[in-house]
Length: 320
Image (cartoon, rainbow, N blue to C red; front, side, top):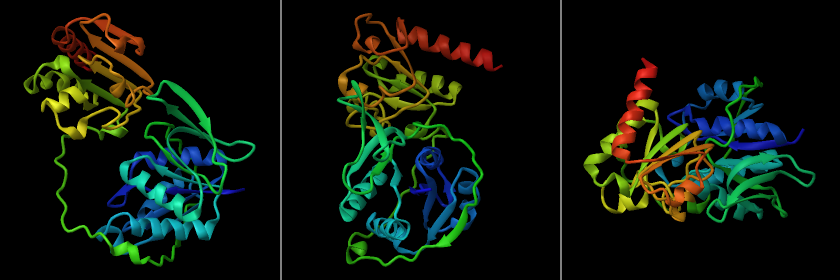
């Protein structure tokens, strides 16, 4: 059976959920071969094997941490040369898309970004995407070379499937460009205790209707009751009410959770582009004509300052 390369996204050896989702998709089109770069590959192999990786190619070198993405591209290219896969799957993060694009150029192949599904086709893997600000769903395949596909988080379930997970050392020769841009310092992100926005199963977002930074506590309380991440519209971010890192939309982050709750968000096309692939969408807005209601599965016409606290109380009471 043909093999599929899966780039492993991890934090200090702990495999992140989007990688496990990629392994589920990879099994639909071939045998997953995971590529783990950095320290902790031997420990991560057990988790990767439990989720379908037949092999785990590992490489550890200071270049992976000391420099930007080029060393990782060098390593992924080495894995590609060693395996000759039918496809390469990469998590659709900012770094993942840069790695994927650089790899596609090097191997002379096409690239598909932000896929929400991958399946086997008669002429190669077929990827499903949301196009034109998520107004349309398209199915695409790469017509030249080995497809390099980045997949959005929450696009597939995490399905355990025991495989060998055999660890193999990957030999990497770094290119001259690998040490061109060095990381000179890092500042750890301050933890909120909430899930990562792009990976969260539930996202609660606030927009212009929140009417001030001090009122975002209402959104945060609902999010915390649901175990959700907090998002914000561009209007709220531009007003300085919430950090830019939490912006959902075309110029922010794209999310695809199981549940998306939009509070005080009108539903401009820029925002819809970043959340329209959510599985279930709920909107709370006092304007019954707001565009967001054309998109939602459930809509509540009402003042968010009355509705959201009641919803939070109801969630808490049911948890109790």
